[in-house]
Amino acid sequence: MPKQPGGQRLRLPLEWLGILPFMIFAVLFLILPTMKIVIGAFQTADGSFTLQNLIDLNTDSIRSAYWTSLKLSFVTALLGCAIGFAMAAAVVFGGLPKGVRNPLVTFSGVASNFAGVPLAFAFIATLGPVGLVTVWLRTEFGINLRAMGFNLLSFWGLVITYLFFQIPLMILIIIPALDGLKREWREAAAVLGATGAQYWRMVALPILFPSLLGTFALLFANAFGAVATAFALTGPQLNIVPIKLFAQIRGDVLGNPNLGYALAFGMIVITALANFLYIWLRVRSERWLK
Amino acid sequence: MTRFFAWGAFLFGCLYFLLPLVGMTEFSLKMRRGEYSFDAYRRVFEDQRFWDTFSYSLILSAATIVVGVLLVVPTAYWVRLKLPQARPVIEFITLLPLVIPAIVIVFGYIRLYNTSSFLPLTGSALGTDILLTMGYTTLALPYMYRSVDTGLRTIDVTTLTEAAQSLGAGWITILARIILPNVMVAVLSGAFLTLAIVLGEFTMAALLNRPAFGPFMQLLGANRAYEPPALAVIAFAITWGCMGLMQLVTRFSKHERAKA
Image (cartoon, rainbow over all chains, first blue to last red; front, side, top):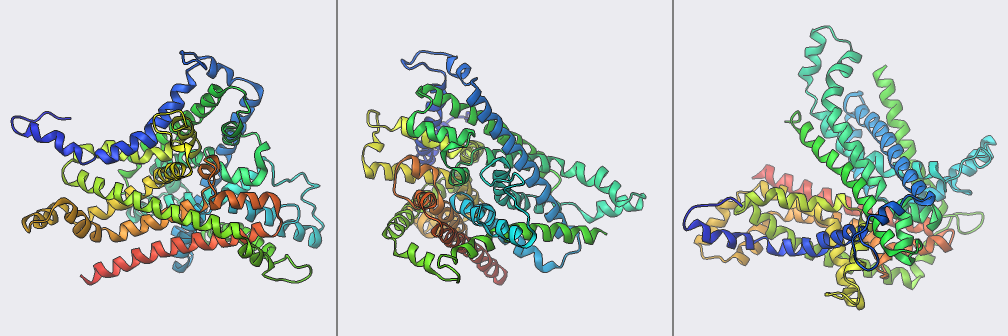
């Protein structure tokens, strides 16, 4: 709080009272609950300080849960960025009719919010054992997805399902960034003799890079914290961190409440890193977008 | 060449997005052997739990929207008017729900507000409902705050406030009759998004053991074959409806502004 001279000083605390309700809400329902988890991760059952919980995370089962979660988030974020970018670029530069752009944006708004339990149902009805595509491929072309090793309730099944909300999120964020690429830059590059590929490699992509990487980080965090889709798709047995934490909160499956705190703490650390990367990069990229 | 790749990428994406929608719709109609019928939908609508959980979630989303508006509009207004130096702090807080996964927040609630704590909210059904509403408010906070703050940017907060004050209006009058109507579009668009988020939410309701729509869908999915895709179609229609209403109010306001 900046100090102000004389009579101003008495009024200052009163002005801060205006945001008091919001602050009380934030402390009670956002900050204290999180602190409880963070502090609990460094406590023993009787409340003394320890690092044992974090060390105990290093078991085969928990390590593989984190590894699968990281892999899942990484792969869906990468594919989500690549496919979302391709679709957004197709609509913005690809010479597609103008009429497809607004429907695509609207649909992306819907699809990025169509996550969770119903999304899992949609994919079971499509790629599940008796789903539309599975049956169609089998009866029309004799392709048996199951025999080829595809299973919706597996890692790649989850990847395909997660992409349904990852790609639209990418489209929503990257279209404004693509609009920010000024026509003059392309013309200037062309005047200097650059080919289309050179323009993309040396002008457009370096400008877009913070946006791309930032959105990647956001998609990563988005996938890492998702519970409902995976739970509805595979039930409690799939070994990823959010599902493991869900089971731990319901029934202390790890047999140690403080280990549960440590598990949740690990999630906070990972999503926080990803999000701060996103926010930092977004601030950098906004320089170019007016 | 570019056009070829553009169409390729676009059509590939459309195929990927359309197939699950077609799949769930087709599957939901297949309950009667050999022909398409709406039997699955009838089953869903005949299920009392559908109406109970759906209305429960509807009430909770209304409560969430009310709490969210009461919390966000005065705060965003006050920050713009008197406390610009608090903006980074407030913005940071409103972004926190995107940083901390919902499952971690609700884990904290369960441990912090249990029956032996200073505020034993999980001890009673009403207390848990309040806690769940607060949880949903945090989930909606980033969208609600950003929407309202953008809305406030388009009006001259200081002049409006001074004009109202010189006519003798108090703070509550200013907020309810000057500021709120002026940011109504932003509030509504935040409200519809909140509705879409709360109606389908699963994690918080399931872990707090409340009979909401999300856990009901999950339960049905674990036990039935044809009703889940029917529910998915219904949920998709609801999401689409919420987003449609959001666009509608935004477009409506643009026309208003163009005329002015």
